[in-house]
Amino acid sequence: MGGRYCSECDEWCSSSQFSSNQWRKGDGCSRCKSCVGGGHHSSFTEHQYSTNFQCGECYRQFNSQNELNMHMQVHRPRNVACPICGEQRFRSGANAVQHVESGYCTGCRGQDNARQQIYEFARRQSGMQQFLTGTPMLTNGGHYDSIPDFPYQCRECAKSFRQMSQLLQHQDQKHNRYTHRIGY
Image (cartoon, rainbow, N blue to C red; front, side, top):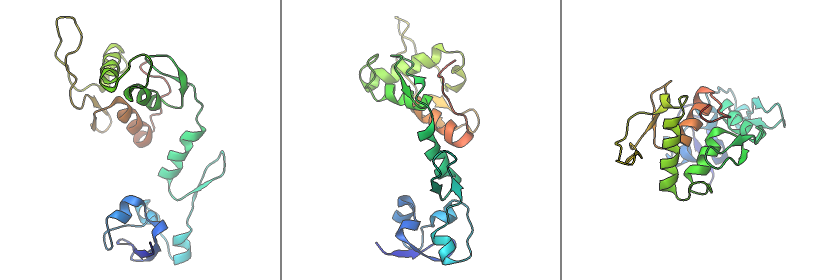
């Protein structure tokens, strides 16, 4: 796949210096990893091999703080329990909720049922009600008949999410709000 010029710094870069998203934007529109990460460079060799972010646990090198933050998740202990089945094998609240939302949780089989279970769980937990955007209609049985399309909202930036796991992941990555316990 050769290379191309970065649209921001105007330097020739190999294809490995572009993320797949930037590469797909095409020639003249894509930015190299260094420019996307906010790094500045003065020569081709510095540009091509810049790794300024090191993991303190395994000493791997990364090109940006975001890449290092993403990597650091592998070093978290697996001590988070699923809020439905109680299985304790997850590294974050987002991972535990993804387990439920995927439909593989033994406590609530199927994705539609899982989404309902997570929403009802969030409504019952006083600490999680702040993340709910709307109130669904109730049926005669007291169960929620419908869930809003984007029922969860980040209180720091007002971004809305369809899945609870998306909100938790967003808070962890964008606002450094690591959730190891859900709803407490």
